Length: 461
Ligand SMILES: *Cc1c(COP(=O)(O)O)cnc(C)c1O
Image (tube, protein in one colour):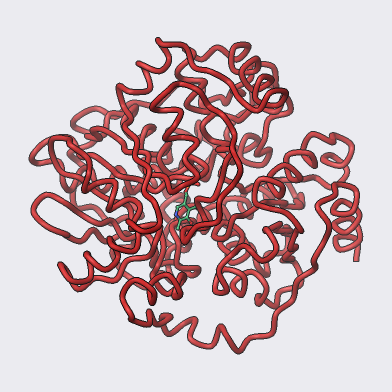
């Protein structure tokens, strides 16, 4: 299995190189040259298997023989050993054919752990084979950063630098990034918003001297392995719930990574129906699905900060599909975005998008009402990101089962939960002392040279 860039110019790579590279050198994102397809029989065989076994089978064809089945099963088992629920990703019923897929039982209480814990071990596996080291830089709107730090802390072959928007994450999110004590993980608070952090990371990768000198790696949602790790729970849940027809998913969406994994599962033959792009007020993807025009706007701070995003990096992977995998066309659209702040899909491309995707925009008042409503209907406390998905699903007319993705534990966003329900969402036992741990963070200006200098110093120390 080879990996090609969405912009068509970068070198084609094998699985391990694509995973280590993160962003392609032409500014594009790596995607497999073709989607592996599972037969109906392969898919039926997965029913009832342990999560790690399904994960190994789903991931295997993407590795092109680089990693064997046994190694994958072992790796995935170790990755999820500390999850608080033995099912790894339990699915709970809301009502009738409406379900909630709980993705928050990992160490940092958000779905990012599912892929990231695998990536930590995958990097270790690859770097040991090559006797190499890597310097991982990433931008986070809140949850990716701590997930990366948890996955890599104490690992000898990696340093991790996480840029987050100063003052714009929840306190729990911030503390999860600033309290790990391992010397190889570093939190950087940037004086800017998430898009500024993401732009700094992209600029570091496009500075090839810096990139090669530091041996940069990325585990942001642009890294192919992030998407791959997320395909697995669409596989397990669609197989479990498809008895009445293909399973539809409502996905709280920011960077378009999680929902793209659902699209991939569908391409592979899993019984995935339609996918709902559920956004908060930062609705660039909702507007795109409605009008075909992808146009940046100001970022609004909401109660679901992990979706306070106006440039949705993984959308480029879908655009690549919508253009019929035409790298030059994608590159031209991304040039338009860089120079004018927008690009347009053709009518044909928009129709193609609508074959698989619907969209919804859920405002903060509705989020609040949904958190309260789900509590009174089911006794479950959901977080604001989950509420965006659940509200989107409530408004959605679609046939068959609907699964809303519960992407974060409510205790991660206690203020929003208290405001909606009057209840305090307690942290689970392994994190109960989070508020007492000492914080370690460097605040830096939104300036490329400043951030690069800091990283050079901290790595060489
Ligand atoms: C990251 C995140 C999202 C958005 O996921 P994308 O893959 O960026 O679309 C939604 N909810 C939570 C809780 C998250 O951490």
